[in-house]
Amino acid sequence: METTPAIQDYLGAIYDLTGGDKPVIGARLARHMHVSAPSITEALRRMQREGYIRLAGRKEIRLTAKGRGIAETMARRHRLLERWLTDVLGLDWGRAHDEAHRLEHALSPVVEERLAQLLGMPTTCPHGNPIPGMAVPKNHHPVPLSQTAAGQELMVERITEEAEADRQLLHFLWESGIRPGARLAVSEIAPYAGTISVVLEGRTVTMGLAASGKIWVYDPSALSPLRPAARGPAAPRAVP
Image (tube, rainbow, N blue to C red; front, top):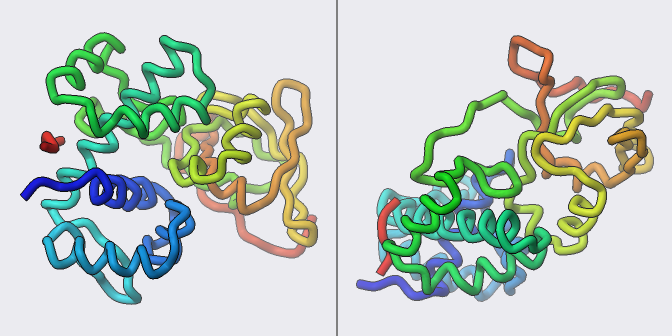
C-alpha cells in the first residue's frame, strides 16, 4: 500500500517532534501542523490501523519500524532540500522550509542521492538537525537554552524542527543570527517576565523562554556534557 502525501507529512512531523525534549502527543502534533484536533485524531487512528504508529502510555505517539522508515526518508529529503535551497540558492530559512515541503514529495530516490552528492554529503540541515542516512554528526550533549544559567558562554548546536512551525520565530532567529555555530553568552534569565537575554556578536537579543527551549546549545570548552541549570528564584527507505 502506497502512503499518501498527507500520511507522509504526518509521519515526518512526528519524526521532527521527537527531536525535542517533550513526548509527542496529539495536541502537540496538532499545534505543530496547524490542524484541528479532530483531524489529528482521525489521522492517528488511520496510521495506527495501517501499522505506522503505536500509542504508548499517556497517549504518546511512537513510530513503528514501518512508520520510521517512511518518516526518515521524508526527513532526509526535506533536510537535503533545505540545505540546497539555503546554501546554493540563497533562500532564508522560512522560504527554504516552505519550498522544501512542496518539493519533497516529488523527489525520486535517484535525484535524492544525486542532490546529496552535489551538496557534499552534508550531515545536518541548515538548522543543525541530523540528516537521516548521512554520517552521524558529533554529539555535544546539548541542552535547551531555556535550561542554562546566566553567565554561561555557549555555542548553538541546533534549532529544533519544531521551531519551523512558528514562522515569526524562524524569521526572528534568522535575522538575529542565532544559528548553528553561533557563540553567545547568557546575560539574564527573567522567569518573572518569561524571557532570556543573550549577547551575540556584541548585541543583546531577548526572547521568550518558550522560544529559547527550541534552541539547543552546548559549552564548547567543557570536556563533560553540559547539564541543565537548576531552576531557582530569579537572579532511509524509499517512499513510493
